[in-house]
Each structure stands twice: as structure tokens, then as C-alpha cells.
Amino acid sequence: MKSQRNVLLFLLAFLGLGAIFGGGILSISPTGELIGMPLSMLEKSPFSSFLVPGIILFLVLGLAPSLLIFALLGKPESKIAEQLNFYKDMHWSWTYSIYIAFALIIWIQLEMVFLQGVSWLHTFYMFFAIAIIFVALLPEVRRSYKK
Image 1 (spheres, one colour):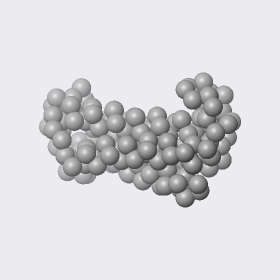
Image 2 (image 1 turned 180 degrees about the vertical axis):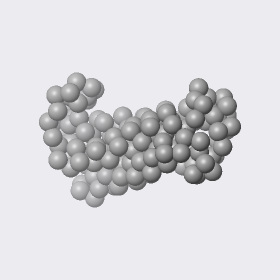
Image 3 (image 1 turned 90 degrees about the vertical axis):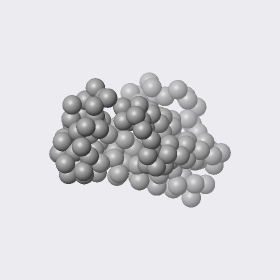
Image 4 (image 1 turned 30 degrees about the vertical axis):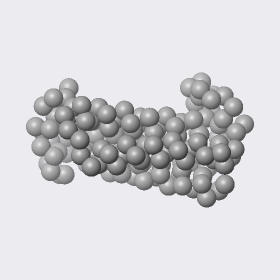
């Protein structure tokens, strides 16, 4: 049971660290120059620079999953987090791991629409989001977060 939970923690850590790095770089260099992404990539998007996408990436897919790891480990009580917990029989941190996976799916879908293309990274992160959901739904993982 603990090893399956550790897989979930690892997946969230991988996502969080990558998004903190990527979002941080895009926020520091909104022109995309630091990572070789031309502003022309944003032509079909509502953004004129990478600043806003970088901040969203940093916060939603970087900071949130990183903090969620601590919540999954410590299972703290949170009345605010519980209000958005659709699975009342589960600890809110487990539910939020599912939410993070769906946030990643939405992020990738929007990226593909705005960029009007698909790269191997989009495919990788789609399967990565599915992996987070799959591992979170494993019976042993669910049992460890059942109220």
C-alpha cells in the first residue's frame, strides 16, 4: 500500500518540480528567450507574452501539486479544502490529486488548441495525467485516504 502511495507522490513531485521550473523560466523571461520559445507561438492564443501562462503553470501545476504532497503525507484537516471535495468519504488531499490530473489535461488541451499542433510532450503529459488518476484510483491508495 505504501509503495503505491509513493508512486502517486513521485508523480506529483515530478509534475510539480517540472512546472515550477518551466513556469518560473517563462515568468522570468516572458519573451520565451531563455528556453528558445518564440513569441510567435502565441499568435493564436489570447496572450502576447509567456508571463501569464508562466504564472499559471507555476502556481496550478507547480506549486499546487508540490504542496499537495505534504497534504497527502500529513492528511491535515481543512474546512476550505473540504468544501471543494466532491468525494466526502475521502480525504480532500486524495480528491485534489485527481483535480490536479484534470488540470494537467485541460492545460495540455488548451496548449494544443493555442499552438495548433501536437508534440511528443503533449502526448507524454496526457498519459502522465492518466497515470496520476490511475494510481490515485488504485484500491490500496484509496483505502489509505478513506475517512
